[in-house]
Image 1 (cartoon, rainbow, N blue to C red):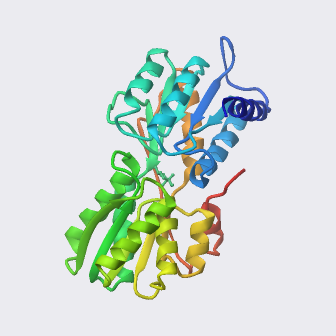
Image 2 (image 1 turned 60 degrees about the vertical axis):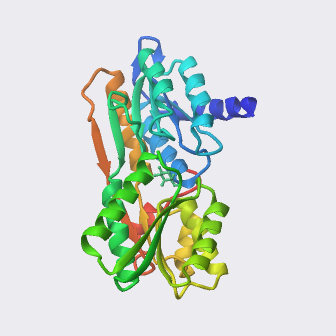
Image 3 (image 1 turned 90 degrees about the vertical axis):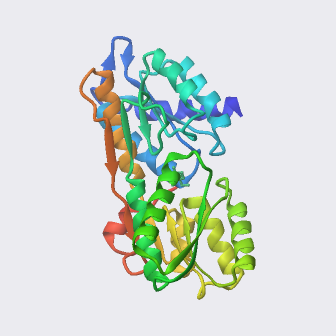
Length: 320
Ligand code: T6T
């Protein structure tokens, strides 16, 4: 596994420093490492594409690494090995708000410039710049979209990944606040956690349907939770009874939208998050001002607007 990762990293590095001119430090081209929340997942692969394109444009060296599961115990060793490789800067999507504080504090003490992309840690002193979707706003938009789909009444359930993941926790907060403030007809059943596992999300939906056969709506806070919840609704033949809104717009989710399994998707701009991350990292390495917080937009995707050029542009891809 480690040898394969080293080879993959080598391949990526060579590709990135093709660009002319380039940003250098006293010891050669600026080196940046992007540590994804989950390797191979379309959200983070699209982020890597945006980062690579920006790295090429700015002539910096970029390598991309990520754990095989969205799990701090798998991400921490990667952070430690990246620290040992002494990059000038690190872009990272921390997989837990607490668990990554210690390793990132180490990186900071090694004067590695840290840029947080997509997710954050609780310690505000970590991360010269924090770039992510406004997830509270995204969660509220999901609540409005779901309320519309279910006629503003009935039981609604949220399926998320794990508590302690800043992005999805913020989406839940936005959803709950919107339901509480403006949708008295909707009875909120609370949140259940899929541990970012597709089959776990399916199990949760099957159990929820058994407990509340009159369930009306589901908000799935991320790609894997949505994919699993959707396939359970499909298998249970409940597509006309239960409406779902999912965060993210990976290929599996777009298929679910086309098949009427999900009514709306909230698409983030991972490519832009990656590109802005590299920009901020280069500025930090050069000692130039960086922007502490950069919220990026999200777009509601429906069957009606799916084939428009604007929407086609924001759909996630599994490679560049
Ligand atoms: O929703 C994205 C990301 O924003 C979140 O932090 C973790 O899950 C995804 O990667 C999608 O699976």
